[in-house]
Image 1 (cartoon, one colour):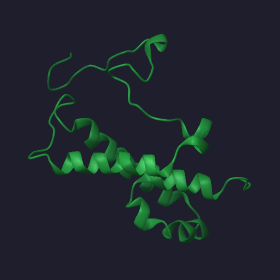
Image 2: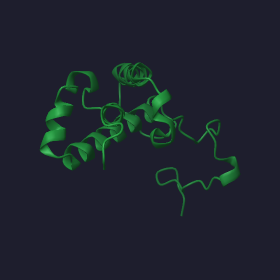
Image 3: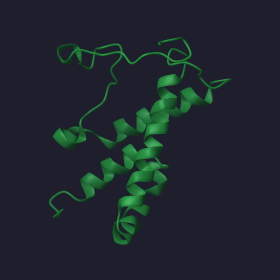
Length: 123
């Protein structure tokens, strides 16, 4: 049963699922067209998330609370970073450590740099 504490998932029709849908996340599909996405744009997004979270007095309790999407985005970026760090070989990890200051543990920034650094490489 759906309650305020345990809300039901909302089913969004495929035809309605787009970047303007209020339940959708605005993002870019890296695998389709990451070459047009600038690192600086992603960095600005990361900084906006960090600034929003720094201004919160308390953690969001519901999806509608201020900062909830930013907190979820931060959590997802951390999970992506953990996945990448556990997946890379020692050589790739060493190469990516050079970008540690730029990415600040944000997996989305790490993945973007990884794709650009390895364009044309074999799998």
